[in-house]
Amino acid sequence: MANERHTDIKEFEVDSSTRQSVHSITKYQPFRLALSTTASNLVTAGKGEQAVNWVTNPSIEATDVTMYTATGASAARSTAQAATGSASLLINPANSAAGEGFYWTSAQLPFSVHEQYITVQCEHRGASASGNVKIEIRDVTGATVLATSGNSNLAASFTRVTASYTVPETTTAAQYRIYVTTGSNHNIDFYIDKLMFEVREDVSTVSTYVDGNQGLNYEWVGTANASNSIKRPAMSKIRGIKITNESGSAGEIVYVGLDTTATTTTGIPVLAGATLETNWPLDFRDKVSVISASGTPTVSGVVWGYTLV
Image (tube, rainbow, N blue to C red; front, side, top):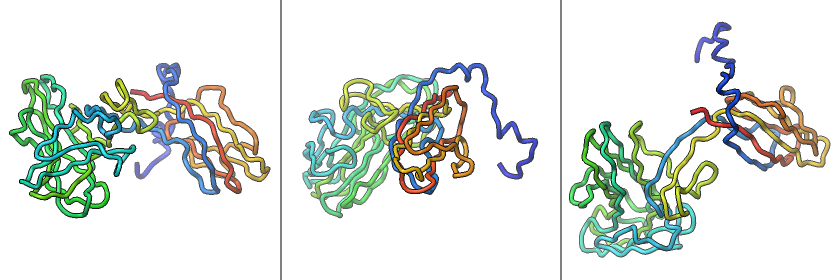
């Protein structure tokens, strides 16, 4: 907001509804970190991005890579390079023509009376900084290109490429393919990692990469590295905190701020060796901020909350 006035108090203070006050705690954020005399946030509230990845071995952590079909090239799992995890898909083009690489075929996209948005992405890295690749969305035959990233130059570091396609409303249920291939004829090996195929009806923007190994709120739907994966919404309401000041030095007092930036004058003090634990449900919607009076004391504990959908 701008030009705030005292009459905007309802924007500053929000009373919990009955529904919110009895909502179960469904989210947590554990922590253990060293603080400093500069304030930092343990948690910043917000649902964040929710997303689903249909690719079942997206970071090539599983040894089975048969879901990827080579075309005009050889494809194999490699641990020489990785954008995430410990492996990637190594592609060796045959150097006969452009369009050499591999493809992946999706499960069937169901019929819908609404538009559906397919977005795809991956990261590529060249064995040398020459040649190029592109990512495309094609129909299930591979004959029709529906969307493309355009050519992206290979480099000695991983680079993200994306493409998006809007499936018209009332389109017959169908499968689609991701193609990652050379944009021109060359024989430069390249590595592919962090593949993602997502379908949405709300927005057409490309989500941040998802797989079940990415941390808190990420999950495999089934077997790890062999099933779809999801990113759940994060904590949007803060309901409780337990924080222990592990320091043994009396001067290293930790101050905690709730929905405000902690300072040594406005924060809740947690003395060295002590623990602050809330016993009554809170309702904070911005952040938990912490700062040390001196030194770099380590704090540990957990923030509890939930997501209001």
